[in-house]
Amino acid sequence: MVRLGAGAKFAFHNGSDEEKREVLATVLCYLQVSDRNIASYQYKRPFDVLKKDPEGAFCLAWSG
Image (cartoon, rainbow, N blue to C red):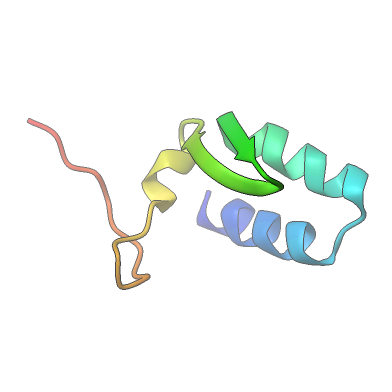
């Protein structure tokens, strides 16, 4: 899954507009855009483990 996530980042940064839409549709279940900027988003499972902390490091959401 991490490899797929890393591949999605590469595809998004280097792809056409259509490829970028496909990446977003694969990785995100919710995306809100305001003034041509991403206002909020929510990852689909299992990509939700790819969240980053404020310093930019990957972190896992632990529950229980």
